[in-house]
Length: 208
Ligand code: SF4
Image (tube, rainbow, N blue to C red; front, side):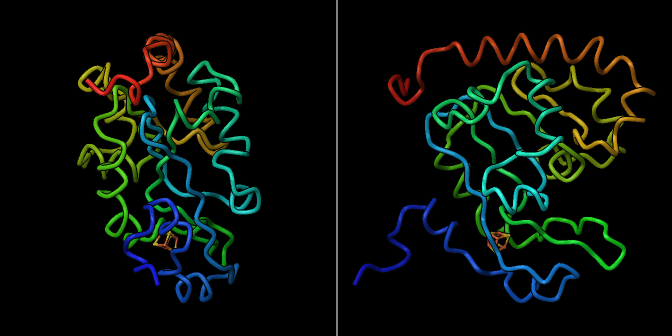
């Protein structure tokens, strides 16, 4: 019989049930459903937070209004976004963390990043462009300790390989109104960089 450790990484993540007890104890009492969406050779990494309830139901990342807004920010449509040979989506947790009794999203369970993240990034290799989405991803990938607005406002410190963004949730609509520089200054540069990176030759065909 094959040792489970020999199975491909994607299969092992899909089979992961490490958080079963934790999720059973949430208000939603759901089972783990890892939404795994990456393939070596991708050029654009979307480093997000965790699937929401709609993504938990669909099994595909960002199939919700946050995804529509994120695709608009990136300047790409669904066909490109869901092309795993070009775009990888690696959240801080692969499963929907559930709601608390007030109906608020629970944070991504840290065990997911600790268990899988380095292995996933090892398979993906160095990414030409990483788009970090939301406070949890900013903290993890940039070690950001300052508030999200400050980190995003300093986006030029990390561009053009890394872009720090707020979460594209409807909850941040007020934030977007208060920070017009985000749409006026950051997004045009991000869209141009996305276009440039996605038009580069296939990394898996040209590993050098
Ligand atoms: S959130 Fe991550 S660690 Fe937890 S069950 Fe899902 S895949 Fe496993």
